[in-house]
Amino acid sequence: MQIQGKFQMLRIIVTLMAAASVLVGSGVSAETRRDYMMIVGSTTVYPFSELVVERFVDESGFKTPMVQPTGSGGGLSLFCNGSDELDPDITYASRPIRRSELDKCRKNGVNDVVEIKIGYDGIVLAQSADAESLSVSRRDIYLALAELVPNPGDGETFIANPHQTWKDVNASLPATPIEFWGPSRGSGTRYTFARLAMEEGCRTLDGMIEQEQEDPWQYRSVCRTFRDDQVNLKVSENDELNVEALKANTNALAIVSYGILEANSDRIRGLAIDGIPPDFQTISNNSYLISRPLYLYVKKSSAELYPGLREFVAEFTSDEAWGEAGYLRTEGLIPMSADERKKYAEVAITLTPMGM
Image (cartoon, rainbow, N blue to C red; front, side, top):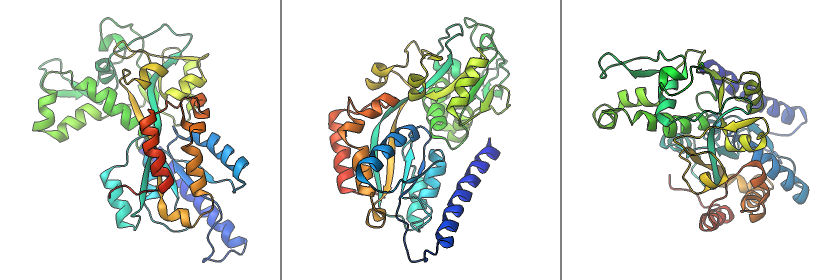
């Protein structure tokens, strides 16, 4: 998984170097700024971005932004590298920016980070529509996917996860193999799934809530770390390939966004988790337990340098886009409340930086 993440970052660096070569080869001087925006970040937000970019270009006449899906962690890393010509102006994220990332931004002179929440998304465990319907708890998910699980011999120590079938996890579940497709380390989807599904399932075990206070490092190792045996958890960032994998293997599950579930509802179904199915209503009213906010992070300084940035952000945060009947709803974006949309629309208009 780590190797794949390194290859992904290498591809981004090569892409940015290629952009620099175009500038140099076309005779553009080092002092001349590019005339388009550069955007990186979350693969979950990327499908929404495609619609916004299309509307923005068609209606404004500005040049098409250079958009590269890198995953949330990779995008924030690139975003915080600095404010030079080859550094991105906007990054998408399917989780909030971390303090360590803000510290990196500040260290590299990026002191004007604007945080704009754009809506919500559910993280779904999906299976083939042809498979026998499966319903699991967060405890089941933890016991299936964690690297370490309680030692059944003493209940106090932990061992490498031996579970190979769902029946090994829970005697009431079928004896089908545990097979998952999911995103790599650094992905906001993976981070949120680990926190809201695995960790919450782990916390149902005796003594784990107390251990969070007594030994936080051990707690995180036990509750948030995926098994890494390459048999039960396979890494793929391509949602379309994950959907195809489910069609080919009716035993397998995939960790996908709600938008992917909606777009492929004829081919896959979402599992109920702790008895609650993933759908528009359960995610929007927060009864579905594995949902997360989605963000844009913007450098305010870029608004004065690159044409169209303010207009692009305004389009993304317009009622026509993110509203209850907006066109992003068709891609699976769960709208915020009217009050939240008003709050972040004002941030978008003023480009007010967050506290650093």
